[in-house]
Amino acid sequence: MSTSENGILIVGGGLAATRTAEQLRKSEYTGPVTIVSDEVHLPYDRPPLSKDVLHADLDDVALKPAEFYAENDITLRLGSAVTSLDTAARTVTLADGSVLGYDELVIATGLVPKRIPSFPDLDGIRVLRSLDDALALRAHAGSARQAVIIGAGFIGCEVAASLRKLGVEVALVEPQPAPLASVLGEQVGNLVTRLHRAEGVDVRPGIGVAEVRGENGHVTAVVLSDGSELPADLVVVGIGSRPATDWLEGSGLAVDNGVVCDEAGRTSAAGVWALGDVASWRDAAGHQARVEHWSNVAEQARVIVPSMLGQEAPSVIVVPYFWSDQYDVKIQCLGEPEATDTVHIVEDDGRKFLAFYERDGVVAGVVGGGMPGKVMKTRAKIASGAPIADVLPAS
Image 1: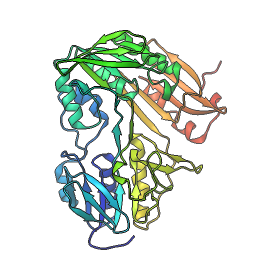
Image 2: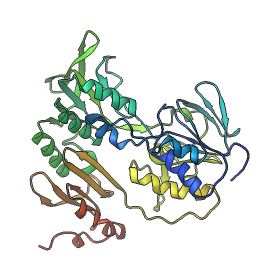
Image 3: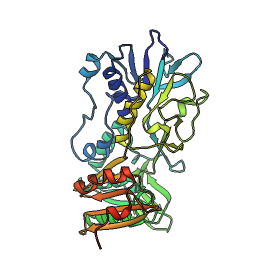
Image 4: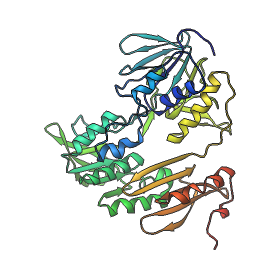
């Protein structure tokens, strides 16, 4: 890597930024390390936002205390949005007009929530991505009586569960045939539907939203595409997110569903790297893949830092893992299941379940609801591409 007094600049305020900084110091890099984030909070963990932060009085989700950054000589510039990148000059410009130079730049800006442009500007329509979003939603939920959640992906399902714990009446609207159907397939989606309906959620699959209505500047109802109307004093839009790359426009950096990287996180510009949800890395098969899994970030940091420092990067075989807490059921996924896989539901007690995903005769993934031990013991089988027969119960 090139060296000057600028050191390594990390743009982002979440897990990817903190893990990268931490890995740099573990790798005995002694130059300047600066984290720049548009948020005023210490870099924090996002998974609790739709769970503990919403239904419990959890305000502190910082990944590391302030002392960690001071003790490791990591500079934090919080509340400083980066607006542009000049790869030739190796500088970034902040919203306040200040310019920061870098020897190496790490892009870890994550995602921004998608919105529905046709919706009117009404109080009570919310998205959930940041800690401030979560705290505002929790405050609103304290007085809300009827909520409509648009989109039954993981965020939508988790918010539904959290709001039900707070006693709010919830309707969950999803154009797919079932919650999570686009990710986990309709069969497992139906099991998730059952879970939510058992908790009193009005699940409306296979239907869209026609309009949102309001009075006196506040949302009052959601009209569905079949003409039915759902009363609502709170609407949460959970229709997915997109990579936070708007600030890279005009930089010349290759962006295609995220910042395009090689298998070590190098971008198309010298001295610029990317990891986490914003980054599309080349996988072992030569395909570009952007993986939105919490566990993926630490593995990428273990590769990107030694590559940046000219050290030998470890060879890592990663079995993707993610989880979702909904009521008393932890839904866990190992591998890369797809909605088009053949699904084998091997256990189902009416609430908890275990399902294996088959693709081309091998086990591609496993999803369990309330089955942590049985999910985790499948890791080696997925990593080795074992035949599906190896994990199915003997007939």
